Amino acid sequence: MFNIVIFGAPGSGKGTQSEELIARYGFKHVSTGDLLRAEIKAGTALGCEAKSYIDKGQLVPDDTIIGMIENLLNGLKQEKGIILDGFPRTIPQAEALDKLMKAHNTQIDVMLELEVPEQELVDRLLKRGEMSGRSDDNLETITQRLAVYHAQTAPLAAYYQQQGIHKAIQGTGTVAEITERIAAVIARE
Image (cartoon, rainbow, N blue to C red; front, side, top):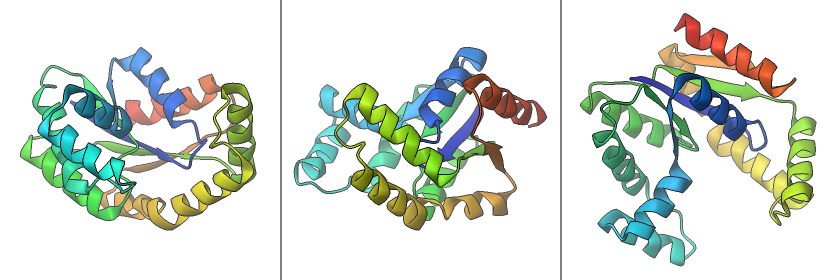
């Protein structure tokens, strides 16, 4: 399996590029949000545990998310690869993910960081909010989400740089141009 962590600030195009990579390579998209919703809907033990935290407005603990990813990996023996979107978000999560992947005789092969200037991120998110009607895509919320990203999630780039698997991708231009930049990196890996 070829395993990718797709990374970038809110509005950087992670979801869009994940869709492009799925279409091109047949990878499985792994969104922790989707995993959480599926486990809760299925009423699994992990889903019930996650729901108890969510219902209290708390973050779901890392070990619960890792358990969900492990359940997913157990069923993915025939997949070409996975794209992790939205996880890991912190160094401890990345370390736990590395340990889990090693236990499954695989690893993260590349971490793709979509780099987009801050003002373009804001513009993209405001536009997405207008088009989709998402109430969380307003300037105040966007500013807060970007601040949290820079404080808590951005340090992951250095973690993956130390492993030699971090690849910065210019996240501006057309969707096709960005996809081709990513494909060039994948071809070299």
